[in-house]
Length: 471
Image (cartoon, rainbow, N blue to C red; front, side):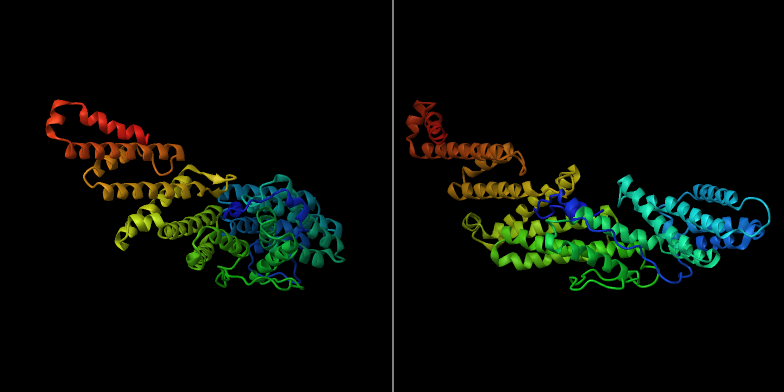
């Protein structure tokens, strides 16, 4: 889901470590009593038909069909199941399965029949909901199927152990469906962490602690902390979602992952900026970059939004680094001695970086297909500054001839993002045209007019000597 962090600040990720670092999946969340009004409350009420016998089932069948449809149309599942007609077809399919289990006659169902019906209901719900909720987060079909199997096995084990199927078994079923969304959220956190934050992003000796802390972060948010919380988890910097409807499995899973992103990103940001920014600017740029990512992530609930947050952090910190580097370059201070002139150079240099980064976004240029590739943008800034410095140097060397050289530069300039070969060729061309124009002007000024008149090619011939020498 948030694999965009991989290499985001120049760190290579070795995904082959995933197998060796994989931890056991988190425990299935359970509780002694169900909570009324949860996402799947309709499913829980529907299951009561099973314990009421065949006559009661036939009397209430239409009502319970409606309850099943209501559960699928719950607001928390609207994104996964927007087609109400499809939800109706699924609910009717489930009801036909229950019809077969109920059989004919009027006798009370046996405990075995009750357990079979409860497991059928739970399995149908898991098979319907699990792939839809995990889509985009866990895309391997074998993994999705294994998750569904594990969720069903946990409920089935509880149902099979029940001594009184009509009460204990029903409670097992009710707990399982009430907590399905919480468990799926927990598994999304687990698999996202496993896929995108494994060593070397997290040191191998800290990996188990890191995954345990992500699990605790999620369960604390949904108000179901494990009995034995891990110790010494890093402080969470992403605030809890608002209490009430705003705090659910979706927002809590996002927060747990976002806190993991912040925990990984912070040292990477410090290291990357420390290697690029002048010493006097490192603390300021680092603080700004971390604050940018931290303020953006809480509102980023989708993969696209997370990408946007990381891109924004990369671009904004890159612009600040570009500005600091430009101001620290001695050739800039020499060519542009006034603060106002240097500010203009900075503005154009930062604009070159921004244009390069924006082009990378539009073209989808990303490291490993994931991370915005702004590596070439440092070269774009260097090229832009080289042209500005050369133009200003020409103006100071010979103001009257400088327009010729500047015009040549701007005519041949291949763009700030061009290769160094093309950039150097254009810089050389501009310098040669300036030198020839300057030589021509000085030859005319210092040569007797009679000689110039008598030999029409004298000026051009001697001016080209300068070009030949420089070339």
